[in-house]
Image (cartoon, rainbow, N blue to C red):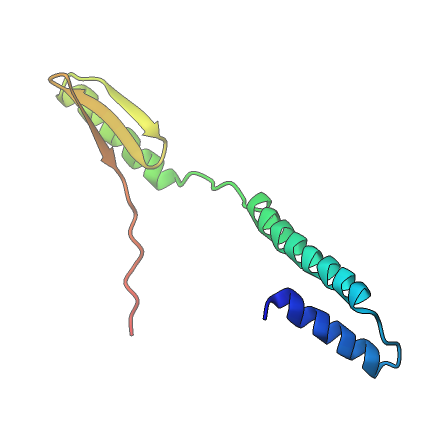
Length: 112
């Protein structure tokens, strides 16, 4: 039995218990409307969560580390160094080969 069929039987039973029986066609229409409203609500909730995401502020410590790595590469390797992501990744070339370094801050281990 599908979700729709279960909902139709439930609507008909509730209406009969209230003393206002409905036809099967009316119950089908009510079930379809309820299923559509539920589907729309789920979509809207997902969209709302995506919209409410706040942009992250760059962490000063990570930006400083990336800049220091860039300065080191430029002064010691005589090669080009490009910051790909201001607080995560730097790319550079050595002898015509492209390299990149990713900076990852690890969370402290949980005690327990």
